[in-house]
Image 1 (spheres, rainbow, N blue to C red):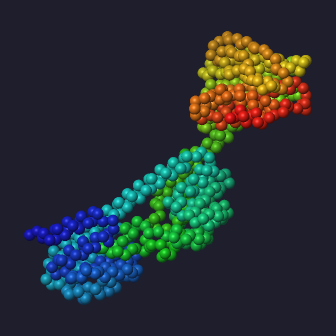
Image 2 (image 1 turned 60 degrees about the vertical axis):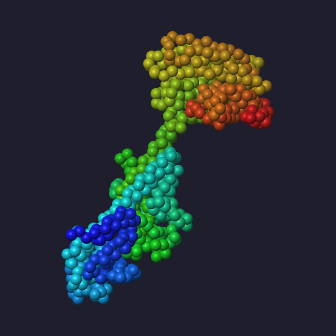
Image 3 (image 1 turned 60 degrees about the horizontal axis):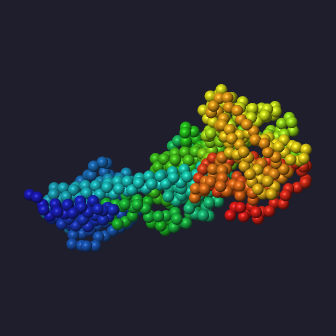
Length: 632
């Protein structure tokens, strides 16, 4: 015959279990129907940890609405005989035969009317077990009581398992979100120092209370960054990271060990963490009520908390330190050390720390590789340009080069100034299409070919034709533009300006009175057709006139409204009248970079101010007000 009353109660119990966020919420739904079973007078629930310490006991008598709850940390080694191995264990015992060293609930059971005890012990997780004991009299159907007890335990275990699973899923989702955010934060910078600071900050306080980052250098681990939730501990951690011999020796021993190691207790003796960090962390920071309460709260409706989930104010938790190796692309780049002052249940697991360390290592390695690449590119760029420009009493020479590509590929812009046998000087500037290694190779070929020919006295048109022939013979896949201008001194102090261009932006001449004119030029790009000839254009320049050669990165800098810097260049240049070559080159490059909202081309400038007289005669007065007016 079906017991409708128990079936309805069991159905309600399952419904409550599906909604419960903690096992304690099942108390009324478990105890009440068991007490309604004929012959049952008392229900007692107990919760034990893995060391056979009784954490709490809850008892409710038939006819009473007020349970007796005892929270304790009573050690009962004798209770080991009751600990279940796998499946729940149901037993029957006589009340008078209960051993108080094994049954802490014996005193309550003896006070209930009835001579027998039906008990079920069951495991909730690896950290402990629980028991439900019923005091029954002779009228009870023991088989039915055992069946109901087993069914109630099944619901409790299923509820606890579901709570743990949901907790793990929530924590996994939180960990995944943190890892994603960590990647975004760490990958958002390619500056090494900034990346290292981000690595230290991203995990505190979400993962740990403190963090130390070390890079692996040739001489061993080198401290680079630290952070801590307690501001006063920032310096202590930094000092430990830099100078503590215990930590230095530990990191050196770790070597390339990929596993995350956790240290606590005796393993931290002699370390800077066990005392300095632990003492300085405020309880309000170091302590927190955690979700682990739901994992460690016991069975059958206890509303007490376990010892490892103490609320704030119960004293600091033991310090735990973890060390993870930072490995990227098959090599160790350093290590990250986390310091924890929190419950054990809130410590991250090794898998999470490995994933975080991998992401941090890649971000650090990317920044290091970018720094190496930047250094190499800048070094190569320097070798593609002259180390210094020639000096003379008759000209004032200067140049400027601004890298426009944020990825730092080698650009194809080049310039040079070549004194010639006849006393003239040849100025050259060019731009190879594209960026990268091939562009750099052509840049070197073009500059050195032109320089060699011009040094030997070859006229500019012939020099450009021979460079074009060399490019065609090399089957170069890229074209380039170039312009060569020679300044030949005249007896009257002026200079003959002869300009020969191969598809390059025309140079500008800033006259001493502030007027700006464009030098006539033309000619086909280099490296496109065979047997191309180039013609020169001649004009005179007077003392204090300035010749400005540049690449298209200057004129094609584009502002947000769509205008190109080319449209304002004459006015900006005119405002620089009376300035030396260095100021003109630097100012125009800076103005173009400030002006542009789009465009990533390099900017090369070569400026020659013709003096015609020895140095010391002075420049025309430079009026800063004229320059500022042009900027507006």
